[in-house]
Image (cartoon, rainbow, N blue to C red; front, side, top):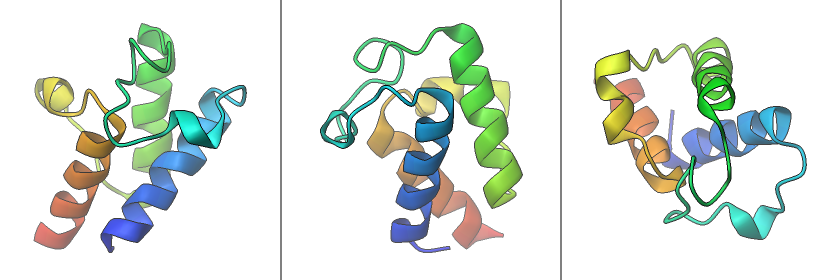
Length: 83
C-alpha cells in the first residue's frame, strides 16, 4: 500500500461514515473528532471500515496517534509497509 492508497482508503471510509463532509474538509491537519465532528461511535466505525478495506487494524492503544486525517494516512501507510 502506498501513501496514495492509504489516503484513498481514509477518504473513502470518511465518505461512508460522514457523507456530509466536503473534500476540502479532508486536509491532513483536519482533526477527526473536533474539525470533522466525528463522535466516538463515528470514530470507531471509521476504524472498523478502514480495517475491513485495508486489512490494517488500529488497536485502541494507538487511537491517540491517529487524531488527524494526515496521521491516520501515515499510520496506515507505515503499518501496511511494515507487514
